Length: 361
Ligand SMILES: *Cc1c(COP(=O)(O)O)cnc(C)c1O
Image (cartoon, rainbow, N blue to C red; front, side, top):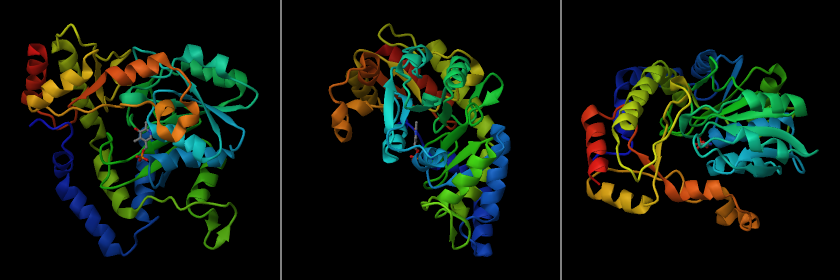
């Protein structure tokens, strides 16, 4: 069986180093907001080219903390792609804000910059860009729109650690960026984890306080905060794995290149990228009219696949107030996408077998 993602194999590669660092945590007797957090935050901020990194509980919290940090709430609108993972939308509605959904570009699967401006109203506060499947959004036009209308740009970078646009990494392409370190992400820990990166000193101060019960120092509460912290064990593991992130992304690019050059099946549309560096291939999503049939065929041939995602947010039961809305491109994507096995530990032989089975299908 070719696994969609072999997390055990991914993490075994660093076992000695992570064992040592986890031991350091246990020996120290300090489990939250300690030296490991500090070290990782410093290293991840430097990696992204951002001034600040604030560890937090998970990716959803990272996005939610940014919205809280800016003080956005009831009545405020945030523009967001209609085909994103539910977390981007939940972060907005959790804070009482209104998501304004925008269709993606069918070739990049990222928000279509040409459709943003018509959605801006007097209530719009921010544009949330999502670097979906690992490809950095082409930011140029979005930077111009944000500047012209005085809007913040929030990045959802949960799928795109290390992706580059115009020599800058995700995490440094907007005003603030939320990352997830969920085990399956390109940089993943051994449980839940996340962080915010930003160059904004005031926002960084606020988010750090809000994430820790709204306190700037112990038992002194300046905000009605939340409890959203990155624990020392996860920070230690992330600090080890960060050193190998670029290498891992390079391997993902190799596999993507191999798939793109060798999958030859007229019924399949392969994912496109505008630039090699822009994509870290968190997900390799192909499209086909016969998605379910292809998935079953691959399963029969011992190849695991996944669907990112089967149902768009506006068709989810939790958002039934939007069920009348129509986003044809988003809906088409959700009907047609299928994610092939993709990970830094996928072997050449496994990638070859995937191609062979698809081409014979
Ligand atoms: C994974 C993910 C999140 C949420 O991250 P968690 O750590 O699971 O909360 C947010 N946005 C996108 C696009 C994601 O893929």
